Length: 426
Image 1: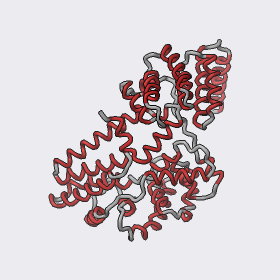
Image 2: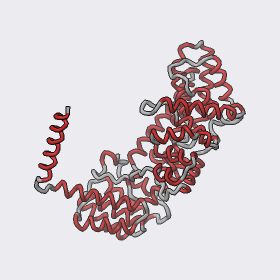
Image 3: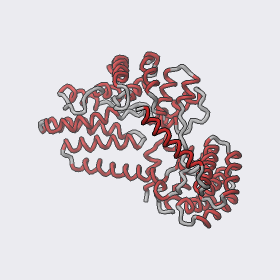
Image 4: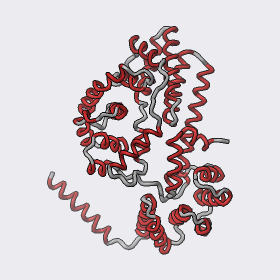
C-alpha cells in the first residue's frame, strides 16, 4: 500500500513539474483577467466604488475589449449617476458584443433613465429586460459570471458573540455546520424568542447529511418548550400545526384524532402573525449587531429559512397517503380543512408561501371534488411557476449595481409576490 501511495505521489509530482514547464498559454491570461474582474466586482459589493473603478480601469487597459469588464464599468458609472460615461462604455460594449443580452439591457436601461430620471432602478431594469426579449441570463448571458458572491457570515458572528439567538440567525443565513449544530443543541435553553424556537424546530428536521441523534435530541427539547405556547395559541395555526406533524412519518396516514385537530386549526384566522418584512428586519439587526458590516443576502436567507413551510409540506404528503382510505364524507371534511389551511399559508407575501399554500388548496379542492376551486388553484400554481422562472432569468444579483439590488431586495421583502408578478405582466 505504501508503494502504491508513493507511486501516486510521484506521478502527481511529475504532472505538476511538467505543467510548470509548459509554454505560455492564452488561457493563463484569460484566467488572470477574470480573477481581476471578480476582484472589482467584490469591491463593488462592499461599497468600495473608487477601488472597483480603478481595478476595472486597469483590467480594460490590458484587455480593452473584454465584454465582462465593460459591463462592470458601465454598471459602475450607472451606480454613480454618470449616464454620459455609462453611454460611452456601453457603446464600446456594443462594438465588441452587439448580440449579448447584457448589451441590449444596458442600452435600454440608460434610455429608461434618461426618459424617467427618478430615484430607483427596479422598474427601469424590468422594462429593459422585457424589451430585450426577457432573456435567460443564466444560459444566454456572459460566460464570465458576475453574480454577487455570498460570503459566509457565521465565522464573523460566532467570533464576536456568544448569544445563542444571534448565532442561530447566522446559521439560518449560512445553513450552519455540524459543529455549530452540536453547540446550538447544547444551548437551546438560551433561545427565548418563540419565533426562533419554532425556526430551530424546523431547522433540526431530519437530514441525511447531518447527525440524526443531535437533531432528534434538539427536536425533543424544542417540542417540550413550545408545547405550552401551542396550547394557548388562539390566532395562528403555524406553531400547533408544526407540533402536530413534526416527527411523524410522511408515509403514515392521518389518524382520526389528527384530522379533528386539523379542523380546529383551520378555524384559526391566521397561519402566521409574523410577516417577511419583520423577519428580514430582525435578522439584519442581529447580524449587524454581531459585527457583520455587509450582510448582503444574509438577512434575506435567514428570513426565508424562518418561513415555516415544513409543516404544510408534511401535511401535503400525509394527506396524499390518507385520501384513498377515507369515506366520501371524510374526504370532504379533510378537503375543507386542507383547502382552508392552504389559503392561510398562501396569504403570505412570498412566492414560497403562495406556492405551498396553493398546493394544499389544490389538494383540498381535489378531495372535495370542487372542479372550480381545483382550476383556480392550478392557475395560481402555473402563475407562480412562471414568476419563479422569470426571476431566475433576470438574475438581479448578476448585475454589479448595489442600489438596484437593494431596491429589488426591499421590494421583495415588502411583498415578493406582488413585486415579482410584474415580471410576467403583459
